[in-house]
Image 1 (cartoon, helix red, strand yellow):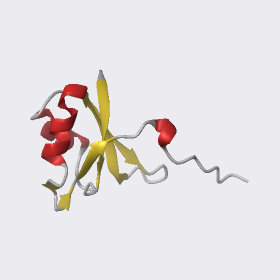
Image 2 (spheres, rainbow, N blue to C red; image 1 turned 45 degrees about the vertical axis):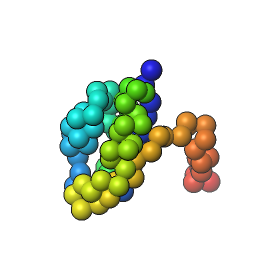
Image 3 (cartoon, rainbow, N blue to C red; image 1 turned 135 degrees about the vertical axis):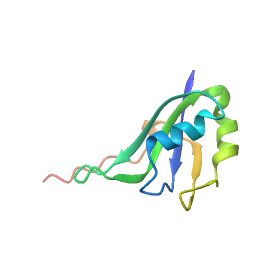
Amino acid sequence: MNKKLYVGNLAFKTTEDEIKAMFNEVGPVESVNFVRDFETGRARGFGFVEVESDDCSKMIAQFNGKEVNGRALVVNEARPKNDARPHRDFRR
């Protein structure tokens, strides 16, 4: 079974391929997805890495606080979508 890790405090120049290669050093990575701004397409500084659950705690221990491109990463287990803040509808 796979788990998702939240990866935050990413420098804007950090790429999904760079994060995937880094996490692959500890265990297989299923996917890497950075959250992007709808209008500009620019990464918003955080994303998610999907990994095998066996490697989850090892990756958190190894990469939380690790400096990448001048920024200390924040890595922890992602919360389920139903725990996320409610979506605000700005259309009126």
